[in-house]
Amino acid sequence: MVSTAPNTIHFHRQHHEAITSGEKVTTVRWNESVPVGAAIFVFDELPAAEAVAGTVTAVRQYRLDTLTAEQAHQPPGTDMQLFAQQLRENHYPDMPSDALVEVARLVTIVRA
Image (tube, rainbow, N blue to C red):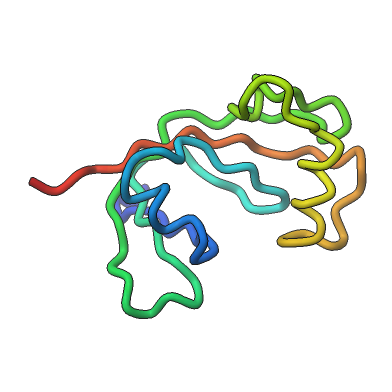
């Protein structure tokens, strides 16, 4: 049976404003299967923040060592070696340089 419940996607508290404003439209994940469909975005270490409803509209896989700024939806000229280093330092310390990462495209559902 297919679940219709939205998937929960966790974010660091530093991303709260960018998610709620709709500025952050992608997330790069390793060893976290992010399915396309309805989602609830929650913010770790920010208990006062309400969860945000959204949708994962697309997920693409790339090797980390060949990931481009365009594929990761980063500004042109982004140092992607530094980007990968920051992913390791902040989220995935065991991630190898040739890891297969997922780039998930996000849409936030804005409440009226």
